[in-house]
Amino acid sequence: KPQSWEARADEYSLYGFTDLPSVHQRGAVVLTHGEGPYVIDTNGRRYLDANSGLWNMVAGFDHKGLAEAAKAQYDRFPGYHAFFGRMSDQTVMLSEKLVEVSPFERGRVFYTNSGSEANDSMVKMLWFLHASEGKPEKRKILTRWNAYHGVTTVSASMTGKPYNSVFGLPLPGFIHLTCPHYWRFAEEGETKEQFTQRLARELDETIEREGPDTIAGFFAEPVMGAGGVIPPSEGYFQAIMPILRKHGIPMISDEVICGFGRTGNTWGCQTYDYMPDAIISSKNLTAGLFPMGAIILGPELADRVQAAVEKIEEFPHGFTASGHPVGCAIALKAIDVVMNEGLAQNVRDLAPKMEAGLRAIMERSDHIGELRGIGFMWALEAVKDKATKQPFDGSLSVSERIANTCTDLGLICRPLGQSIVLCPPFILTEAQMDEMLEKLEQALVKVFAEVA
Ligand code: PLP
Image (cartoon, rainbow, N blue to C red; front, side, top):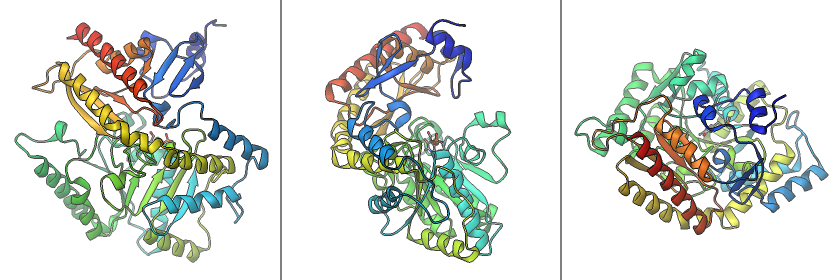
């Protein structure tokens, strides 16, 4: 039997989403507990987790109020479902709360266990709706390249990443439009406005070509997260929303990362000023303490889906743990903590410092091509040459090297493509932000000196 925690992790795990050369170089990190924004491993080493776990541990790793809410609910009523017209009081209260804090004046909520399942369920709900309205051929789904919507068969098909080809995905009928990343995808001489207009035209032409009556819905993250923190290009949502409206295509805002404060506002659609037809929430919804996803339908979809359900007298879909009482109790507490205990405010207060610190790092470096982000989600893009935007080559990517060096220095950040992503917990103090920026810069200087 292997001795160390790291060897035991290697021996028994099938790592998901893990760059194996990188883990082989560095070794696994096995964690035992957390303190504020820090996680601590089996050797007692502390790491500032500038990744918030996976964007979700927004209240840090030892929030007493959240743990107490969970414990109290486990003691009171530790589990139930939401089938057959039965559900916990916590489920009812959370649905009310989610509609109240949503941008919608009315709505309905449906629960899942994850963001992937929420997107997958939303697609099924749209297929169900359109079929019920006499349009069963309205099934195609529009998303964008670089979008991340999850890993189930349907949500992976929505995810616009080349790696899904190893599964023979996407399924037919999932169409990926151009990623709204001006810096990377603009044509020679194209202004930001022209770029956005080109993408809007592409959407319109795609809908015309495919036929509006074959398209079930359009899904978008306000800021692409796992695509490498890509805020929309200038005026993007203002340009595409009228096209979707014109063709009667529901717009679903995937707020799994952006929801509940990551961009500074409660929702990313508020930050970018558009009104979707439904919102997908997960991750921050429970501050990472419980696996839960939610679909929040705005008034029009809520009415249409409800009418469709009444027609066949059932919506034949749901998960054993949909609307789990403990998950709902935690979510109610998490929403209160984020919105009323100053966490979202801290994001708004410290975002300018984070941006300024990262911008200064970029200016001091010859190998950071772009800084992009908003609120508490930022990415620095590593390039061999700033002028040509040419990436570094090599089998272990430069971003993996940077992330490994950060880990050695006690900082966890995420390599995504050629970029390094920082999305710290909302409780981060100014001093902890300084620590994050200092360690990041040390790692960048060291790795760029090695590879340049
Ligand atoms: N949608 C977005 C925008 C995400 O970032 C993620 C996960 O990172 C998902 C959906 C999938 O959520 P989950 O991993 O909970 O299935």
